[in-house]
Length: 311
Image (cartoon, rainbow, N blue to C red; front, side):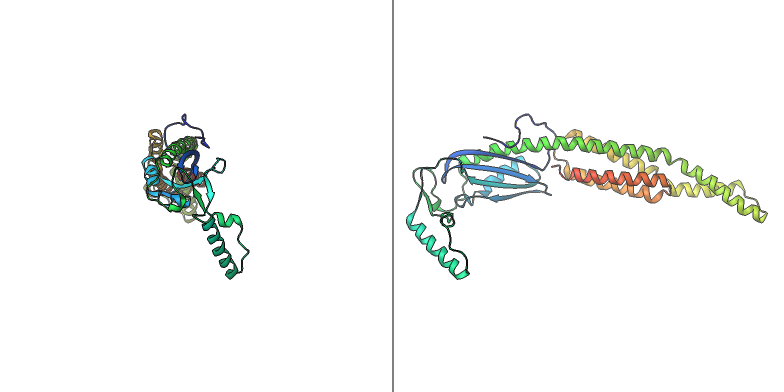
């Protein structure tokens, strides 16, 4: 087995949905040795897409069962191909099938106005290449039963894929934790400035009202000022939003520390983070807080992109 990614020492934790692995086995399946390749990308659930030789079509179920036993999410592309590097002396051309296929392809090409088929075109027609000796003959057609040798190779390659995804997941977790720290710095900055807003509003209100009243020879009572400042402070209060946002960050850290398949729960948690950041921006009229909110939104967007890759 020769994996494309390192094996064995991958860190345990939260795996990524992206990764690739491959391996070779020489069991007598069809024409001899086969190369098995698995490649996974993001996906809401677990989806397997197959590309198999003609004589192995129908083996999808057995392979997919093994994938589902080891993976929770991702789109997995399963490719099984004959090993072009392996010797295959038992493979021969069936002259009768070759002649029939060549004649049929030539007639189709003539009617469609296409170039005359080549020998290669004819050889890839199912059944033209026959097998002598042990193993299945490709002329037998597809089978619903995956050969044990093939499943053993698939199991080994799945192990390599899991290791690759765990290694990628460890890198993602490191990046996500750094972004959470960046978001916490923004929370701290806003929390430090928020209490000053009411006091500054009171000073501006007093100055403005005093100018108006002086011009009209009237006086402002302290009760009036207190009432207006209290109304403003209540409207601009973002204490609860900051507390919930900090709680979401703490929850995300705990989930990452626990490991496992946490991609979907984290995605929902990040949606709540963005909701709180947006509310902070809409409630606070302060320019400096508005600038910080823009930075926090950018950080949350980056979190969303990274978390989308986790299983």
